[in-house]
Image 1 (cartoon, rainbow, N blue to C red):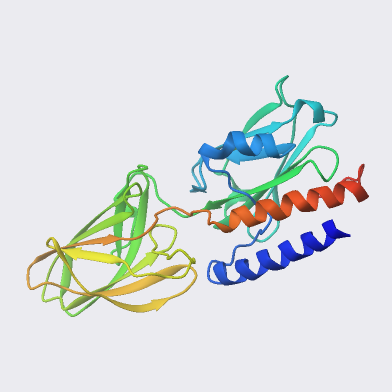
Image 2 (image 1 turned 120 degrees about the vertical axis):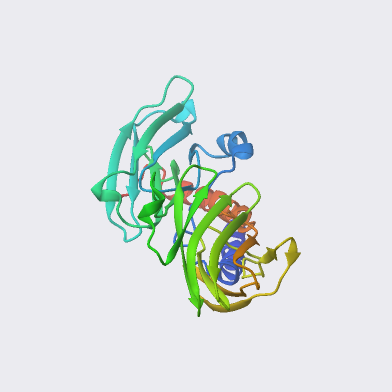
Length: 299
């Protein structure tokens, strides 16, 4: 009785915080856990079955390296892995067998007609009963490889330090832009956008959130830091939604302008609520284990 009450209380607390923290990001899988590399060993000890990917964000030309661990004493059934796309369709099903130490690995190729959707993909693995189940999530975003000419004349071609090219839409008031260039450093969470033109008064950049974003500790939007000619400048946020943020900047009284925009992250991050989700998951496993010791969940 006391255990049930504690679980209900934890669930209420977690849901309350998740509603506040993830209202804007629309996190689609509250039971998914994205394991940081420095916590892999901890999760392997705490869970009977774990799985993780080598990154949290990929494009449609990626090879996703997946690793996992099933405690050897639980190796009584094969591991079934299922990946679903952002609209809930299954894109792949794999049956896996761990080695003698309980480790397993496989690869997912996103360059396929089944992986055309942008957004969050859910990877679920299970071995036998419901208590040996684990879910994680990764994100596919659009990007280009090779020629910068694949971006339109209304977009800036941005070369990232992962060797991918991303297109940043922009609009200008008056004047003409003759040349553009962009660089993204995901390690320092900054993007540098350079333009050549004349008689331009202002420019609006439509920055995709998966490329660069700025968030507070409560996962709400925070301001970017914007520099031009080594000086901090102000900007106007024209519009924003779950996909992008549009910021308007005054164009300097010169032919060439360079804007350095600094955010809080250039790849999705997993917030502090993961700790609550972990606690709730552990408590739920204890309760479910008492009632369904031999159940199997359908994918």
